[in-house]
Length: 242
Image (cartoon, rainbow, N blue to C red; front, side, top):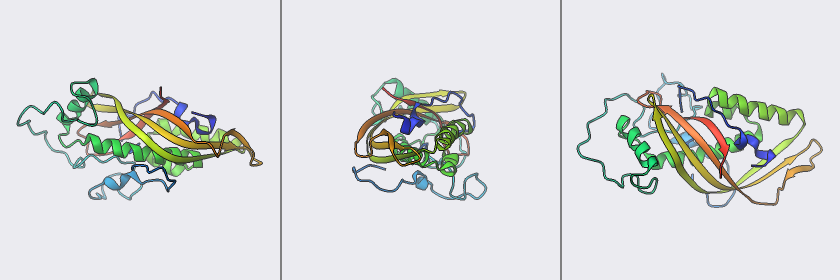
C-alpha cells in the first residue's frame, strides 16, 4: 500500500493471549458510494456492565451467544462437509480450522465473522488516516496499537495529513484459520478500492492521488481465546497481501 496508508505494511508478530476483529467486525457491505465508517460492534446481543468495554467503546466481533461460558455440547451427528459453504471449500485447511473453532464454540458464525471483519477493516483504516488514536485504541491489541501510533506520530511530526476514502470492499476471504493452546487465529484477505493521498503542511499532494481509485490487497489476522467470557477478537497482525 502507499505511504499514505502505511498501516497495512506493518507486520505485528506478537499475539496477545487476551484477544478480540471487529478488526470485525469485525470484522458492512459496500455499494461503491462514500459513507461514514461503520460501527462493527452493533452485533452485540446484550450489554454486560461487568464486562470490559460494556460502555459501548469496545472492539468487538461478536460470536452469537459467545458472551457466556457453557460446556460444548456433544455433536448429535457428523457435521456436513459443506457446513462452511460460501466461506471455505469442503475439507480445506480453512474448513478444518473452522471445525476446530466450532468444537470449542458450536455457535461460531463464520459468515458473521467475515462481515464483521469487513466493517472493522474500514473503521481501522479510516481511523488510521484520520489519526484517531481513541478509536484505534479500542480496536487493536496493545502491540498493534503501539505500531500504529508510532506511524501516526511520525506523519504528524512532518506536518503531513493522510486522506483515505473507501470506494468498496470487493472481497473478504478467509485464508488461514489455526488454533493453538485455545487461541484461535483467523487471517482475512481483503480486496478493496480506495482513494488515498498524503498532503504536506502546505496542502500539496506529496503521495497518492485524491482523484484516483486504487486496488488494495491486505491480509489481517484476528485472534481470540476460545471459551473465554470475553467475546472480543483482536487485530494482532497486518500485512500487504499478494
